[in-house]
Image (cartoon, rainbow, N blue to C red; front, side):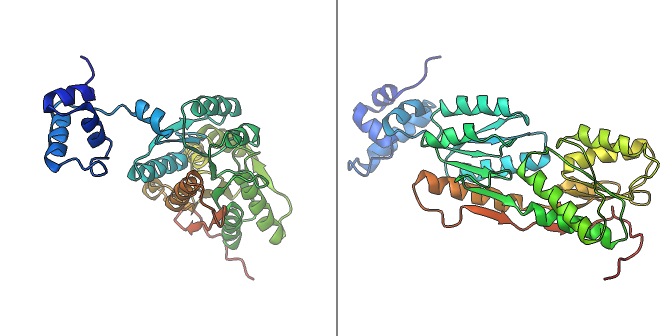
Amino acid sequence: MQKVNINDIAEMTGLSITTVSRVLSGKAEQYRIGKKSQQKVKDAAKKLHYVPNHFAANLRTGRSGTLALVIPSLNNPFFAGIASEINTELRKLNYITIISDSDENVETEKMELLQLAARNIEGLIIAPCGDQWEHIKEIQNQKIPVVCIDRYFEDLDIPYISTDNYEGAFKATKYLIENGHSRITCIQGVQNSTPNRLRVKGFKDAMNDAGFLDHDIAGDDFTFQNGYLETKLLLQQKMRPTAIFTLSNTIAMGCMKALKEENINVPNDISLITFDDHPYLDYLSTPLACIAQPVSDISKIAVKFILSKIQNKDITASQVLLKPTVKLRESVRTLFKKKD
């Protein structure tokens, strides 16, 4: 079936191709085209199921109406939530979003960025998966606006929006300590990512402040498997931890699977708190305490930043850290209340 074009609409309406083109491009008022002719064009376009040729329009205007979003993993509920929120916000503004998953692999991320840059994107929102930044800076050097979310580079002039990961981890650890826990294991994610480094620092500082100078930190990935395997190993130790702090809800899910297989009850046997919230945490047999990130706010500010960059507007505060929220649920047992 041949695609309908403006010649077909012109033939059906008896109007010139120029008139049809001006109506369909929203310039009818500018060229004083009558309401009756405008309606004839719109009715014909609808009847013929006309679809505008955006590629041709892009060549004329130099705009694509397309933005790219690159995240480390769509399997991670946190990043899936971010992707959904950003896509919704951009759709309201008539932008198309190309969503790409780097699979926590820097080489994949580099390849994705090369392909996206070739698609004439107007801007890039990215949660980098590692500590390499040259390929991201190269995108910015091509005059494509870039904004980082969640993960970022502190010393680069690339705007970013994230959570105060240090404060969130410090508060989570302090809460465990206040409830009598001293043997606390932290299961971390990707070690060289900025959020992970700051969460580990928050954990260590809270432990140090309480006088616990030995830090038990395990793991190396924000995955279910990492949480599962590290918990299995923990449970082989003679001196098990009384509490586990996982640095993402994906790690927490793997952790809970391992605990269940070993008939370890949460929180009676081992307490558990995690970074990142998700609605399903409320529906677990033991609702899971967590540090919740403001996903909606992160997404909206990222969209605001990228549009400001596209429109060459100044961003007054281009490095934003939002406050996390501690959500206390039934997964932490009180051994005894720590006295001040």
